[in-house]
Length: 371
Image (tube, rainbow, N blue to C red; front, side, top):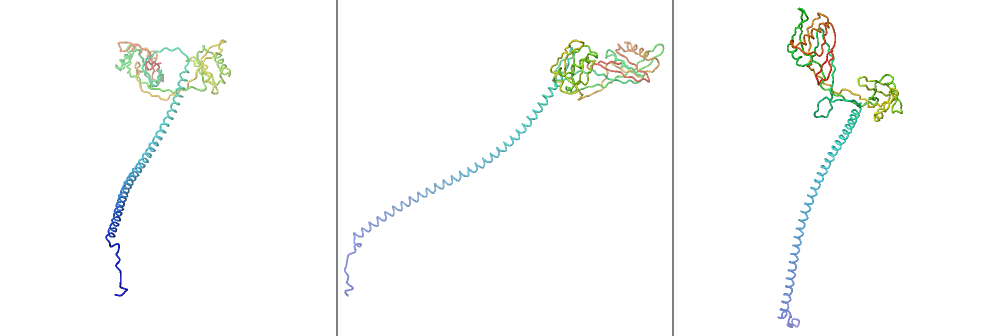
């Protein structure tokens, strides 16, 4: 061997037993360190997985809450819309109620005005002594009154109207129908009895209102032309609350006077004062002033009504004087033997004549008068 190939044997410390043990210990430590790191990584991984699961659960919870919030929001919007619709409907209902209330107020004003007018109407009635002879009963919303109709009944020639005092007598005469009236000697006539029908009012409704230019004066003494002129002069003076007078008219049937002014504006003040002292016949008289009422018929219904006590005799020939023939018929129908009775009135119209009979009286009493 050359010198170049010579070597010396130097022991390798790693190949020794101590070196190997040292390396083994070293590797053990490294292994333990790796295991520790592996455990730490595993723990870290598990922690991260747990955190990830928690985050996922939280995300799901948040999504569910968000969905619930969105649904709640949609429900709230729907409820609000429904509430808005309800409020709009309430507003429409309230507007209708307001309109109804306004209409009721206007109607109330109209009724109040009508009642005020009715109060003025009933306050305008002059003082008079009255005796109640009617019947009592339940009242209704309307005021009723009794009428005394005056009906003109045109008579044909050769007829007569006989009004008996009792209704049953008229019914008996109509039942017998044909009657032979003795005129003296051997002369007689045969007449036929027929019922009398009159067109009488069944319902009459009158609307009254206070006249703005007229006053009614009552509590007056017996008036003459001079007293009427003094009354007109008194109420034509401004100091007495009056004004220029157009007409001054005496109502003879009631003993009252109606004064019509040229202009309006005096009636209310004079009627409010009511009682006035007026010089009549050189002495002061306390007269009463009330408004004058204008009235017009608003409803009239009539019906054919039989006269309960009056009969019509037809077929009467003109064979003698009117008064003589009427006396014979009156004597005949007064006798009980002829089916008659006491006569209240009789009217005979000969052939060729044109006359009318006037029927009047209270319809409730069934009174007829022929004349």
